[in-house]
Length: 476
Image (tube, rainbow, N blue to C red; front, side, top):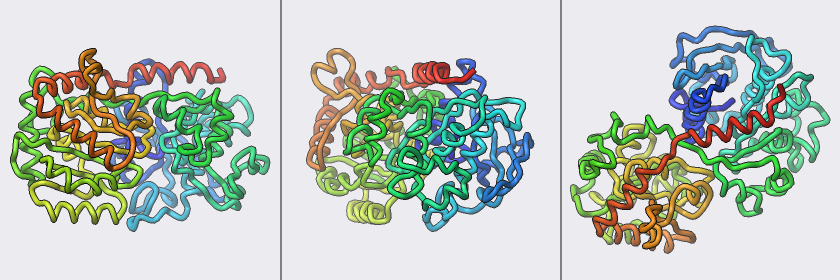
C-alpha cells in the first residue's frame, strides 16, 4: 500500500520505490498487488481498470470501489476509487496553491482502512493479503485497524521513508476514522494530545523498516528521530534498515532513450556529448574542460540547497558550472534564480521537475551534488554513480551507505566512488574543491567513474531481505 507510485503519481523517491520494489519482489515469485488511491492521473493512465469490489459508505467514509489493472512492470494494481476524496485538481497531498488538503486524514484514513480490509477475513476480493506493507504516514492507520481486526488477519510491515512527515491531526478525528477508543492513548495513536498517523504505525506494526541501515540507527537518536526516537529505540528489535535499490533498466546510460548519447563503462569518452547537450539546453557556456556540477533535488534546507547558495559565487570561480533542477521553498527558488541571472552561462536553474532533464543532468554533469542534512536513503547518488558522475554527499543515512569516499587507499582497492563530507558550507566547498582537483587528473577520474559504474544498485538483494521479513511475520 502506498500513496504514490511512479509513473502514475510521484512527488519523490517514494514513488520510484513503490514501483521498483514490487517488481523485484514479483520476480522472486511473490504474489502481490499495489494498493493506490484513484487520483485523476492514475485513473487516466489505466482506462482498462475493472471493478473488483464495492465498499459501502461507513460513518465519515464515503462509498468507494476497488478497481484492478496491470501496474508498473505488470504488477497488479488495486485502485481505490473514491471521487469525493481523490478526484480533484492539485497534487496527492496538496492543492494547486501548495496547501495541504484539509481532509487528508479522511483521504488516507480510507486508504488505510481498505488496506486492512484486504488483509482481513472480511476481504471482498478472491485474493487476501498475508502481509500488508505500508509506506509512510499516509498508510499509518492500517496497522491499527489490523491490530484490532478479528482473525484471521494479515501481519503489517511499515516502512519509514521520511520520518519528518508524520500526519498529525486534531484528536476528534480519531472517532470519525473509526479508531477503537482504546487506541487513543500515549500507548497508541495519541501524540501530545493529537492523532498521529506515523506514531500509530510505529506502535502497532508487526515490523518496521527504514530505507538504509545507517538511517535505522539515526532515527533512534534525538537529533534525527523527530520526536519518535524513544518509541523506535524501545522497538529496536522490530526495526531494520534495508537500503533502497534503483530501477537499473530505467536508469541505464547504455540504453537510456532520454539522453543525447548513450554510453557505458567501456565508452566513457562519449559522455562528453551529454555534457555539451546539457550546456546547450540550459544555456551554459560550452566548455569541455570546466567541471559541470549537477543537482536534481527538492529545494529545501533538508537537502542542503541553502549551503549551495552560500558558496555558489565561489564555486564558479574555481572555475565550475552549475546546473540545477528542482522545486521547493519559494525563498530558495528566488535565491537560485537570482544567482542564475547574476552569472549567466555559469549557473542555470530550472524550477519544476522534468524527467528527460533529470536524466540529462545525471548523464551530462561531471559531478553530482547531494549535501542533504539528512537523507534516509536517496536515489540520485545511486543514479549518478551508475552514470559515471561521481557524487559529493554528506555523511548521513543512505548517502553514507552507498558512496565510498575517495582517498588514495580506497582508489587503490577499487572501492572509491565519490566524495563524502560532514559539516557546513565551508566543508561542502572543500569537498567540491577536492572533487574538482581529482577531475583534473584524468586517469584517476576515469578510475573513479568506472568504480561507481561497476556497483550493483539493483533491487535483488534488498528484495530478498524484504521477502525474508515477510515470511518471518506472516500469519499463515
